[in-house]
Image (tube, rainbow, N blue to C red; front, top):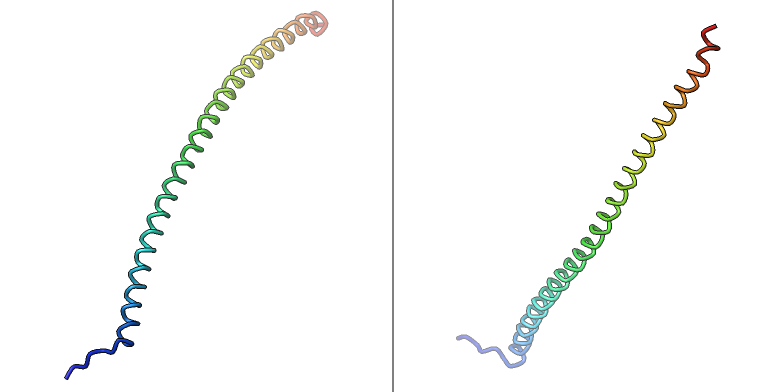
Length: 98
């Protein structure tokens, strides 16, 4: 004959099953909350990267403009130096030929 479990024996099983269900529910809620927070964090980080990217783009534009200015100044200095060398050669031309 199959014996029915006593109330004392079935009570821990029910409690264990209830605890397992509560634990599963808590884990599911926790996973959902972690996923939500993770998504929000990624979105916030993406916004920060957009700000950094736009700032870097502006700084790159400024650097390129400065590079053009320096190239123009370098070319002007090179032309001036070339003219000065030419004038010095002309001035020394008579002295160097003798």
